[in-house]
Length: 299
Image 1 (cartoon, one colour):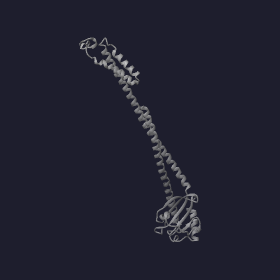
Image 2 (cartoon, one colour):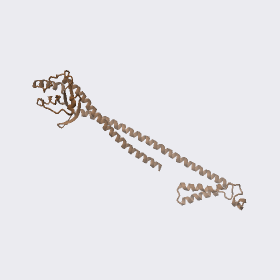
Image 3 (cartoon, helix red, strand yellow):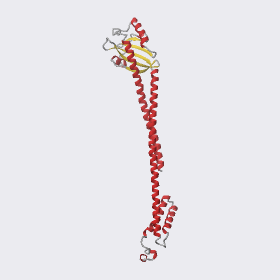
Image 4 (cartoon, helix red, strand yellow):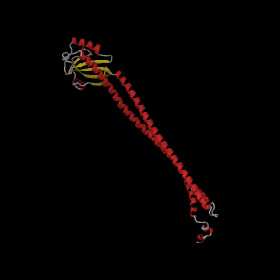
């Protein structure tokens, strides 16, 4: 029964700990995966902002971005942007005035002059705070970065730069980092789970060993007690020639009766031990046994 309870406890602990470790690992993976993704997006946006705004600021003056670029200015600036600013993954670059007018667009001169509402990320960029997000445009995921443009002769935010880049290369890098993170977390959770199982199994094994030791010692003490009772009974019987071996016979009969009555081995053993007890009452000197006709017998 004790062994069964020990194994039941081990199995229940293994199942519960597996559920808890799995849930913890899943939550931690989601949290770290989100942080890895957002961190990579922020790093890419920061690099893109510093590179693009620096190149554009070195080419434009505050007078050139008051109104949309003219055809002449657009042509020379667009050639510069296509050669120096736009990379292989860059899909589009727009330059916004603080009133929401599109000053320049790499998508073509026809886009210049359009007006957009200055809210959301564009408003943040015009106030000096960069913003980055992943958007799906024309069935393609893009990394959209809006950054403030500060010119040397403007003394503040002169315009906002909007850059669209393909998200696929960044997504592949994020996926690699996420996979590494998930594998590391899975390995750590597996190690923790194995360590918990080993600790519990060792504790259970120690309990079983101690239980076996206690059972063995208790049985040894019982055998010693039975031997002591038998020795005392035999010693008392030796004082009485008439009753010699009587206690041993009574003990055997008591054990047989207990066995026939349906008692288990332990209770039958107790009946045998009880069979020795009556003789312990005859501890007087020889001749005082009532059946030997002594003075106590006559009384």
